[in-house]
Length: 110
Length: 113
Image 1 (cartoon, rainbow over the protein chains, first blue to last red):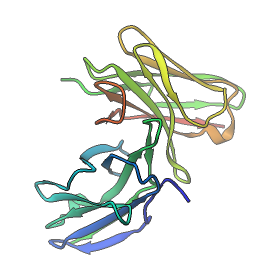
Image 2: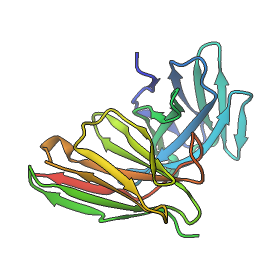
Image 3: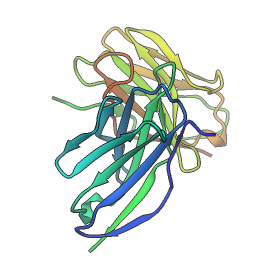
Image 4: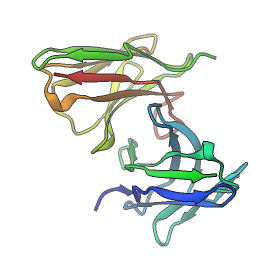
């Protein structure tokens, strides 16, 4: 089992809808979780990160953690075509290096 | 505040050659991590440097090496290039060491012919 897994997509949602992206992780002791967005041809940029003690909301973005099922979600409300990108989930391993999932491609159509 | 810079942005090399890539972190950041990104494997961790010391290393052969200077700038070197080394090489800057907010540079696109 890979340490961090994501569905590659594409996930297609209409403009204005909620996009829900999931990421499963294998280390039950993981304490922090990171979401990056990567536009085609660009480098990843950090959207948000959460710790194991709670969810987090930042504007249209919400990160939620389900420790029992070992997955973390990123919800994007009121999705816009400009949100179309690949979303990468990253979780530190037991040596503190970030392990990235292969990403989920999101397409928001008008 | 200036972001992370990487040079060169593009490189074309042939098999057997070696290459050196450079990364300047955000001012004040002490940690630099390097990643290889390919369509098939995604982002793979190469190594992390903090205070001129390699703090962490991924599962890459010894042909991949790096170093960090006292001003936190970092270089990575790949010797005896192989076709499979063609990738986007990204460096990421962090204020301190450990899993924290990483800010990525624009990357160096390496093509090995």
